[in-house]
Image (cartoon, rainbow, N blue to C red; front, side, top):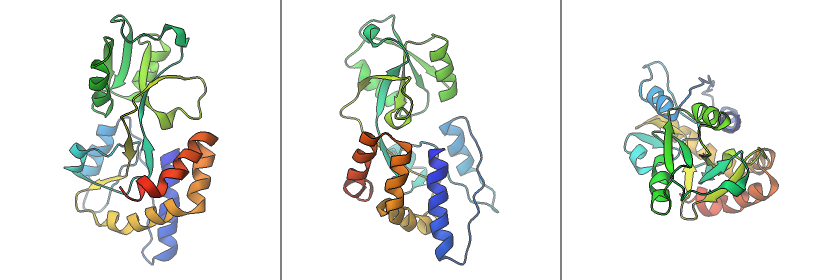
Length: 219
């Protein structure tokens, strides 16, 4: 997926310039809390990092060290359905979100304006299953996850909301210090521009390319 491709390119750059070689071993997890739990509970013989659409937040930074951000994102409300029914001021309309993520902060923002019914799910897979089974009318997703899927309709985007994805490490992890210069180098490279163009539509890729130096590298 997108994150695996990104970190594989960064580690490849590191291995080309260092006598100490890293070998990646990917574990698939079903939720961000589980990914962060695995990072915190690595054995003394391994170093774990989590790269799974994890938003950098002040709360998470108290427990984990984060890399230079590799992608800016914002939460949006999306649906598979006819957009003419969109009405978050109707309490009977149900909005699905994933618990223990930045979705919860977005929900609080939305409640200042709307009167919908919010339904939380433990994983994004559970949320999408509920959408497909018509248990919810709309769902919260990061805009980066919608670019290549034209089955979705984006209904609302919070203009005040901008987050960044980063790689999470245990606090004080030396691996972060070793890899971060190569992340920054990769963000400046033509290969990263090609990476964005391969994974996003042309408008989104152009926008992301334009803010790399302005926002990602100055974070």
